[in-house]
Length: 372
Image (cartoon, rainbow, N blue to C red; front, side):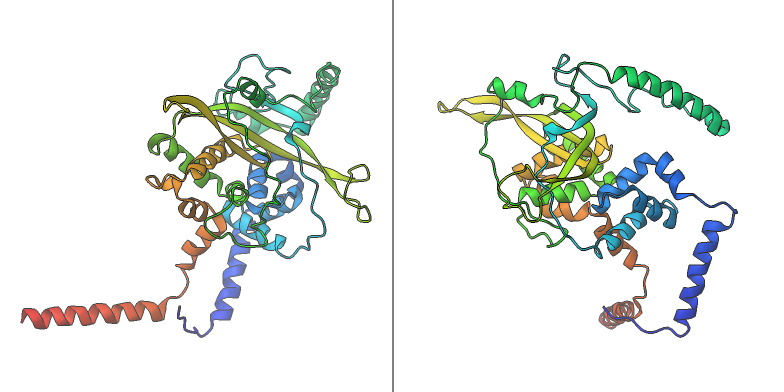
């Protein structure tokens, strides 16, 4: 693609950047990074997920720098991530070990351990709370003290929130889902090597969890409306914290006794039950369930649900529908890829556009000569 130099470009760019800073500061208020962390949980979770970097502080800085522009914040965080060395890989994480904060099933009413509603907007009235205008730190402190006292009492219950059984086991015990052999191949890491088509499932799941939240949701919705997916049911949504361990550097790698605990991350996990049919040995159709899977950083349940739907679409690879085309789905949902390409259209295209104009003029001239 051709570009031409513009005189005074450097000075103009510097002034543009100064104007950008002025727009952020002109009202005389400065957003505090800690306030962003404390009050913009949903936004931070989305930025961390789409950037594939779990750091609330860095996400908050990116949000502040980009003035709340999601695509720009994700771009900043991914760019920073690319400069970091990768010193360790964690041990494989088992979601059964999650310290559960929220756990619901739309498939079964009574599940072992119970439905745990946790923190969610699902049951709110969706009415603007104008009292928030006058919310004070003093009132907040009193409310927190009272709530935390109740929380201490609740934590004395006999239910172990660390190892709640999976709802999926109900279907497995009833023989209603297929058993598959464990695939212990190391997952592909698309942050170090670009995906190549056709992809493996590990690449698809990484792409989906990094995908732009609105794009993932929109494609999943279109799959339900027009892409041949029978109405699915959420088997289980889990929101909670997963412990992370790395191997002791000098160990033989055969045991986990000396692994180092390095912290935990908050995630949302969804296992979706999707009706399907198959033929038995007698050639008759039988109803069964396929399992769609979704997981992402933080609490972002709609995205994890959408992931699980698209996971199933990309497993079936039904090319009659756009959501069965992995290249279409995976490249379209990448916020940095798509935003970057669309944004580059604003940059100078003087040479290429003049070339197009020349072609148009020549074509018009030939038409005029022919008509004459």
